[in-house]
Length: 381
Image (cartoon, rainbow, N blue to C red; front, side):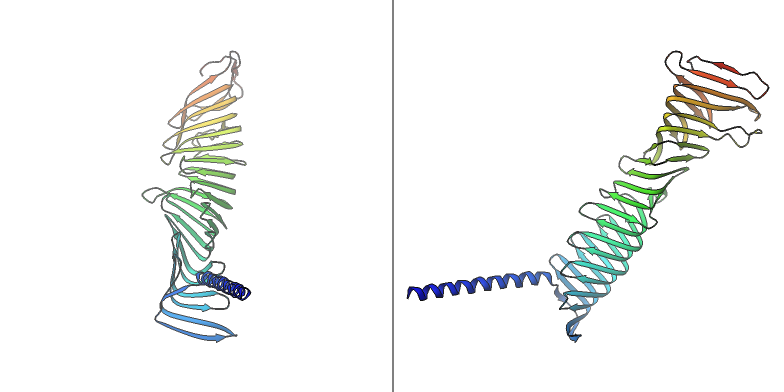
């Protein structure tokens, strides 16, 4: 008798366990499928031995915290896939997607949206012709006519492909990417192009690679690699950086542009630095270019014009002098540890050379036929 009771108890336990497991699996399977909330009409039919359900007219489905809306929805039972058409809207706590049509792969939790696609989240919005959204990874890949608008940073980025990873606050744009930053009135402040762009920390830090060109007011800078730090308003350039402002040109191994309140304040160049200033084209006799060289050069700007130049490390200055009548007077060469040049009304106002005693050198070379003058004193010129 005891043996019979034990067997019965064992069988009942196994039955309950199996039933519980089947119920859990059913619940898990149920979570993976969309739940119908509303549709004006519905129908079912077989196609290629697969059951297809069609819902149309103000169709609304949900899955957990996600809601889907469209004009019509096709459910492919065997594949656990869905086709949405017409005024597609998909929304969960992290994003909102609007498209002409979309496919949803429920097992993988992946959306593919087509047509005029908009993916919005927080203060940013993305537009493209195709968007694939990986719901679990919170990652999106956009292709064709991509445009990203960041209202908080007042930035617009365009390209042909973009990848966004929400968890990492990361975005990468390729295919002729273009970055434009606007001021509060909608006026363009800065434009950046390159072969690829990466955004980190939700647009606070950008890296631009290959054939980089940065335009800000009358200043144009080019290089092979650039970093832009939005909060500190700093742009760092590497790989043959060149910056041109009006008739002034500066080169070196590394370059940093510092802005304040969106206005250029100074440029710092390090490593084989050279600053070139082309003489006024109105002079009657064409002189060679004026230039400064050193281990580092800093340009200080006021209202987008160079007002002060600070050269360090074997600082060398070559300046061609022209009188008020536009007649060439000769070349002034100077060298020291540090050279500081003050500029007023686009002309040199003062040159100061600082060095250890006896290290400053200077030489004036008049035009051919006139006697040259030289000195080796460390003093203000």
